[in-house]
Length: 201
Image 1 (cartoon, helix red, strand yellow):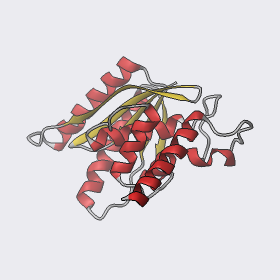
Image 2: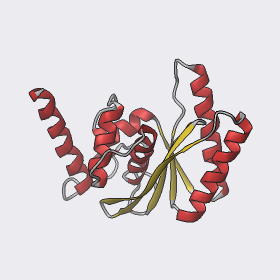
Image 3: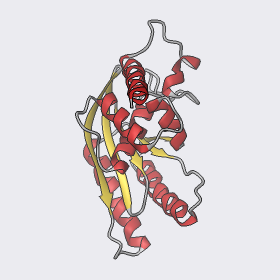
């Protein structure tokens, strides 16, 4: 199953593609689309739409996952994210792809075990989950991969979404008979290492 994760924004839109085979996750591609500040908003949104249509056409993802709009103290930022999200949803709907949405806190909880994790923690756990040597850069790209990881691990084996279940709480919806998956074990071990490192420093 191929999942395209999106961290929406009009100036910078992070994207990440991963493949899930069983409990194994593999990075396919990742990046960040930046639109020129010299362009007006309509042109920026058009550039985003064209890029996403091309990306979806090239990689044929089963799922497009995007962060839900969240309340922000900066109204201008919230509007920009909302407009970019609309374009993402349009491109996914036009292509007939399944769409998954999660709040930033849901994604952080699923990937790091904490809904209040900072960007560095999210980036490090994304690297652990995908077996990468380095944290993906920029932050928008790492955030997009985190969204993709959340979506990939929120799907049941029959391809349907597990409603309301974060990865760390999967047993609430679909109990696992043989213990934790390889992904969940990697998350748990990384959290333990992070805590030990914090105690030493």
